[in-house]
Amino acid sequence: MSGHYPFGGKANRVTAFAFFEKNQLSLELQERYYRWWYDFAKAAVENDPDLKATRLVDFQHYPFGQHAETNFHLHGYKWATALADLGAFIANVIFPKLSEDAAHKLAHDHDTMMKALLTERAKAPREAAPDVGRYRHV
Image (cartoon, rainbow, N blue to C red; front, side, top):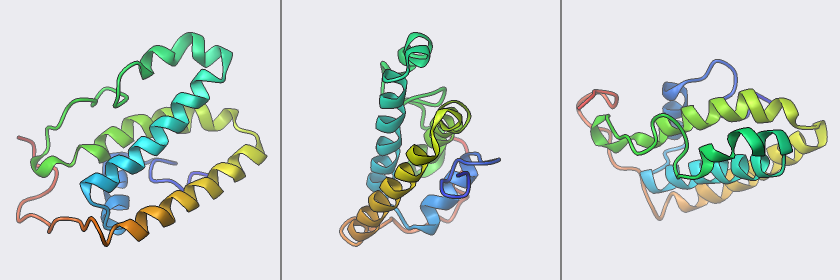
C-alpha cells in the first residue's frame, strides 16, 4: 500500500512535495488533495471506537497536525508539509487497521480522485517554479 501514496513508507514533506510537483498540482489542487485525505482520516477515526476516544480531538481543527496553520516556507507550499503530518498518522495508525477489501477500495477511490484532479489542473495551472529553493525558510 505504501507505494500508492506520497506519504507511505519512509516519506516526508519532500516526498509529498515531489508528488505535487510530479503531478503539477496547483496550491488549490494540493489543498483539495490534502482535504480528501483529511476527510478520510477523520471518518476513520470517528468510526473506530478506540481512535475516537483517543484521537478525535486531533480533528477538531483543520488542517491536522503539528504544522497546521504554519506556512514557514517561501512561496506558500504548506500542503506538502501538512500532508507529511497527516500522512504519517494515516500510514502508521489507520492503514494497519484496514482490511484487504478496504485497502483495495481506498486505492480505487484514490485513483478516481487523482484522475479528477489531473483533469482539473488545466483550469488551475501550477505557478512557475521560483528562482530560490522551495523549502527556504522565511
